[in-house]
Image 1 (tube, rainbow, N blue to C red):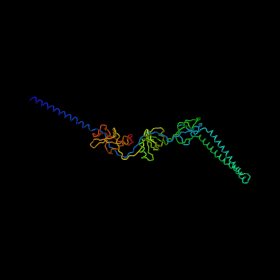
Image 2 (cartoon, one colour):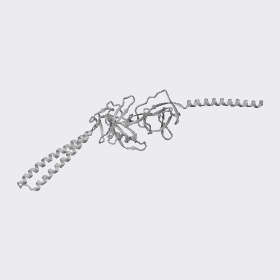
Image 3 (cartoon, one colour):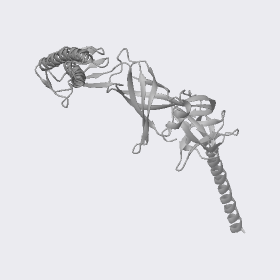
Image 4 (cartoon, rainbow, N blue to C red):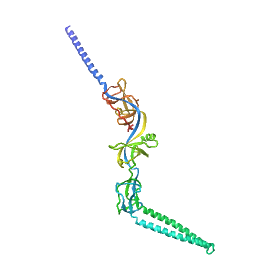
Length: 381
């Protein structure tokens, strides 16, 4: 009887201890789970507005016109009239070549022309005299015909001599080499006494600095956007130099082929360059508005989550849980992403998304974020 009571008491004690342990385990395990289910995140509202999509590229400055100065014929340089790096005007004298031989050729051509003109004058008098005599039957018609033939021959000779004299004058003028454009001279490769040759190195180069061009390349997908937005291909282009205010120019050229290796198409923009801030061969950052989008939806770029297959974004529900929404990124710039897949005014998670799953409970952080402005086409859009 006593053993039975003892066993009963022991059993009751075991049950009591188990109940206490279960009660403690239940409360200690449930309380943290409710607390852990509310993830601290930062959120922002998606904005809907009209925006301009801007393409960014690295460009280099290139002259619109570059002239290599060479002589037409091989000759000796007599005088150099300019200095390296000098700015010149169109028509300004650059070099004088040895012109003595061409002067003598011109003098000979003019002398031959004068002699032919004198012979023609004498032949015309003879023709007139023979015509008068023929009317009086003092000479035959054959004599008149011979005189007329001599006059026509001398007239053709004079034309040939005039052409020869003109050619000699042109060759003489070629010894005076002038600038064909306004621009800045480069390195002068000849000196007095040097032999200048048409097929050799240029005597000097002239580079046009104002206006000037910037050459850059954009992804081929931007071509239709540019052509569609600017039918005349005169899109405004902005160039940015370090520590300088932006420079404004206009698109002037779109290449007729796409680079198959890089998938880009080359373009040129024209810039006024009176202050010579842009120098040929220099690299600059170029931006160009490629298209305008109405009612575009923008979110902070950090809200976009890249999954194994597609991009998505976490949207906060009214009950403070999140769901994932598939999106497409159209453009990214300055911390803002232009997307499709959600509506304006939707609250999205911008920080803390790495710990979330669909259905996770979230709690707003006290720290607020500030949205950025401008956008550009995304490389992987």
